[in-house]
Amino acid sequence: MATLKRDLGDDPPRTTTLTGTVRGKKVVMSFETLGKVAKFDTGPIGAQKEYEYFSEEEISCEKLKGSAWLKMLEDLFVCPLGITVEGTPLIRGNLKPLPKLLSYFVFRNVAPRLGDSGMIRHYKVRVLHALLQCKPVLSLKQLIMMNIWDSRESRIKKMIPHARAINKLLIQQKVIKKDMPTVYMPSQTITLARLHDWSLEKGPRRWRLTDTKTDRVLIFRNPELDPEDDEESEEEGSAGALKGGRQQSPRHYPNYNPHDVDPQLVHSLRPDGFDIWSPAEQAIFYQNSVANIRMQMLREEESRKREQWMISIMYSHEEDINNRFMFDEYQRCAQNYYVGSAHTECSTPVNWSRQPPYQPGMPRHPAP
Image 1 (cartoon, rainbow, N blue to C red):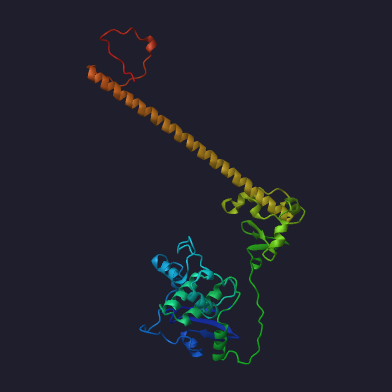
Image 2: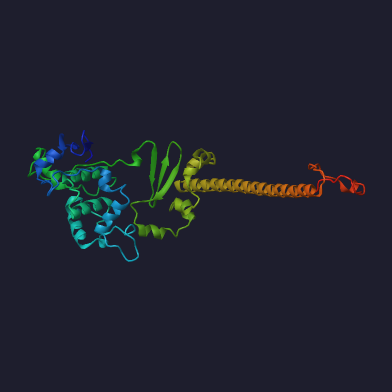
């Protein structure tokens, strides 16, 4: 599986080949070589004379939505009371009797897997519906090669599917003999601790991953630790981390998110003697520094929003004053027009304390 390569060819999946190296020899899996091992595909039955070949996205139903997807769900699942077809959980318990019987065959032969057998994935929905409706007619050769390549690309390889077909293929291409005993080949796992741009420090309960280029630090729970033991350790305080005990996880700090804080700014806050601190003390310093920076950023953001809000309030107040003034001016001009007074434009404010007593015939000042 480590040496496996895929070539789609000119007309996939008919021309797709999987090539791997076993004992120094090239082994090729294709439609032609699989046909020599066993009669996987006996040919379409009925009026349809050829198989229907779909892309991997179409078979996995990743982008299939709308009426076509709902029709497949209606044919396979029983909707629980109060739940629509689209919201029906895709589990084996909700399958109809015949699809449930076919699901055991699919999980053992067509798309084998070890765990999570109670869930029905989108890929299995397509295969189950095709077996139930006898259309579209899928090619088992294509499904076998797709399952093997998916196992090659998966991060956690719990099982290599179709091991018997692979074994028959190795015997047919004379790479191994039928009576050859099993040989366990040593393998070396590539981890982040082996990469030069990262440093991984493993503790009893927490692991510390450091990016050597940006000094960005991520602390996470030991994946090899029993979850029950880790829950018991949550009662310990931060003093234990300063004494070299349990390291604090970032999830204890709700404001801890190193992705929105400049790493150089955090690095500039490191005090003298930081390099001789314990990993737990350094981790707590990074977390608290990032939390303080983000709190300051939040304060600045709130101040900016408050200032914008005050400006908007003042602007609306000025707009209201101007609108009232224009309305009063309109009323004054209309009143002067109907009483026969001359039109006067709005002038500067009048100091009424210095005006002489009003006499009939004197010009009237604009007044709101």
